[in-house]
Length: 393
Length: 179
Image 1 (cartoon, each protein chain N blue to C red):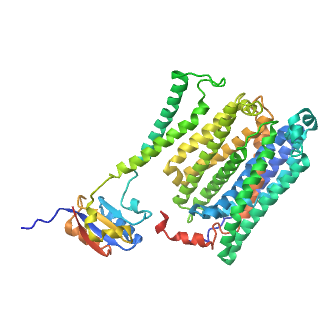
Image 2 (image 1 turned 120 degrees about the vertical axis):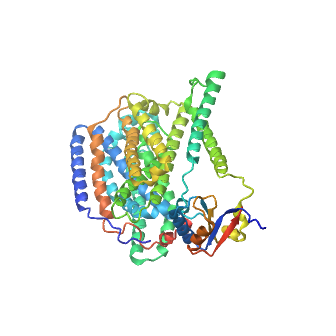
């Protein structure tokens, strides 16, 4: 059941176009940054979190796949590998944020720290140099994992050595633990400390589930396109889409479960330092964004994905996944931007242009990593065993 | 004067899942509809091949889940707002966020019970007697044999023609199934 013929068609044109669009959009934003730095940094942070969420989600799902090796994983393995190999680029794209710490975080403003006892108390952890050191550490872990996983997998394509599979599995177990720890800390560092006092212990888990969901939706969007008269049409069956649809359904439910748990606990506690975070987000038009999240990030995709037909038809699943990707961005927007505008719903032009900019460059890198390789692993012994149909039901 | 026992159907025995799948497809293409296949493990595509339509069970489970949601939420609303209003920490009487976990549990309870009971009922279980067990070789269906049985109630069923048709599919053996 190997498909060495499944390769990406000519994508140089698409790559060039996405790079041009990306660079142009970021140049526009750079112009905007001169006039309105706080708006720029919040817009850029949201866009950055969205795209690195896909890359990190790809890393996590890839390690999950190496641990459980379900039939769904082999057909998207190369997409996941290409997704997480964009992490060095994302490390580069983090650099602008280091110049915006003062605009983004209360703890980076000396006058605010002097005024607030709690910020002084947190100073040994939340300060510029240590923050940057942690960023370096996170990326060191992520890039090491991503490059080893894709290096060994491609080596197996060339040498057909079966023991590489074992190596991939052995790295993935500890790798997932490291992923959990680093993403939890990164979510606390980059998003939770935007507000002055707010804290939530489940926040890292909500963030991880969002990343996993974004990555699954992204690979479904790409593979549905490649399976529709494309190079994956001989590989992807309705059964594969069914499996991926079930995974998306599970992640949608898990996201709703965790997001609601966080709300319920803070609502029940009703504490002075926690509740304002939600109060701002339930008034002034932010309320409508919260409602949109409940309806379009949970209720609608949940109802659609209950249907077997919707999961087995690539075109329907494509639509659901594309919609969920949009809602992933809305969710991150809902986390970040009210920190800047607690009193009114605000959509700046850079909030729309920045994700296009980061995304254009990200897609350029993603397609570059995907180019020229077999779209499914060629010599994985676990995948080869799956051509036996009898026990697959 | 000998009276032949009433016939339930004719059963063909196969060695491999592929063979029974091919046989089921050909029987369906020939126009047989009242038939069933018996295998030691699920064979992918077999239920579609014998023309098995989707059941109404998913719809029943969905309805039970929705009923569970209404029952779960309404019973808490009735208890805390209508029957015994009590001020807890200054929160509104209709504190809907705290109703959600129990509503969720009741949804799962109703849906899961409906799925189990509905599955058993729609399968016609418990069924203490089934004619296919009259065939001695049928015990192989739980080990390494694959069976396709065309039932006598099928409009196309004909004692000789159906026997010839089944023998043409390359089975190990074709047996009569007594009622």
